[in-house]
Length: 444
Image (cartoon, rainbow, N blue to C red; front, side, top):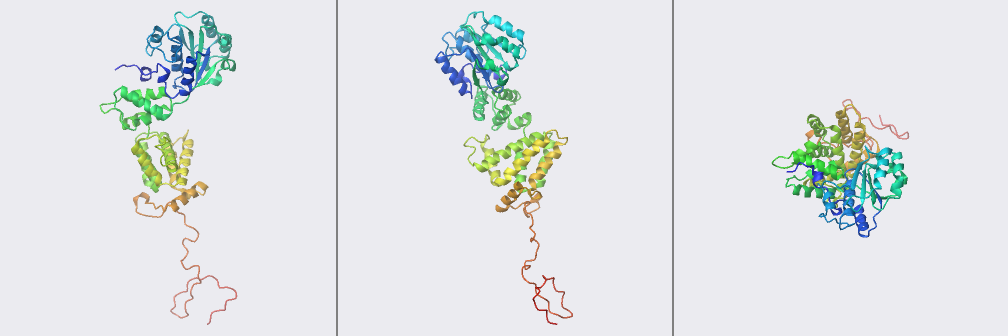
């Protein structure tokens, strides 16, 4: 097995292999078909989404012997030099502006740019991290970028296009790259695992996609790490959650069910388990907020999984549907708001465990608050006839129940109380409401 990193081993060699960027690759291919290629391009977007890779593919398309073409032949010398593991071409120069962004570097580039290509159709400069070029450096490049010779092409790649000076941006065709959708990325990772002949347990890929946050390169790096540490059983869910630091789904199920039933003992046992296992309380709260978000969506859209609104295995979706059915919409919304506020308060907190316990206490006790969210949560519970079994001690009143002012009044309080007959052995008469002013006095 090659020790080459996974994201390098499967780096795309044509626009057709680039995933999630059709809004960029399709116009570029059409420009190549129409032979309307510009002299300068600006590729911007988040890291790991294919900017530099697309720049290399564009250079390959331009210098192919059958080109300019949207589909490089892969057989000519230029295509082989610019292939995935090729030696590179002397006519395609990649510059890291983070270390070569000064005015002297720009002047040196400008002087060399006027020399024609050695063996290719075009001399192409790919300037990565273009936002690191200084203003003086951009100004030194301005004239050659504005009016380059016929053989010269520029491709700027950056994560911060607003830092590229306007005079340069106005002379380029700007293509913004985007984060790759989770569904597309999960399908791609599944294909890569199939090519690697590796077994991956269900539920692992959503974790990898979540860790990669829409970046193909970051997701591939995480997947590479998991595959490297996989045993005979392949990549298991337990291994992935442990290595990536995510909370085990069973803990999330336990704390959500504790919130739904008002079981404070179960909720605080989960908190203790999280701390004893050495998990980060902030990570636990973040994962809990993600779970509550899924429950809010499931409560509003029962077929959210089929519509792609929730990315989770089928068995997890079934459990979440059951959990969502035990909550009211107001209860879920309140719980999510409180967890979100608690997560904000945990940043910089000296005692994350204490903050986590306070979050659980606030969620469990809507009756302790008089704000609109808590009142709506209590009404939700009353309307559904929710009955708690706090701490497993048997049935009892709902924890959201608050006695009203007349809760403990006698059942007959609204009617005049009877007056006991006189007599030495008569029991004391109960206290009755004061008689009206016009009522006759009792007989002696």
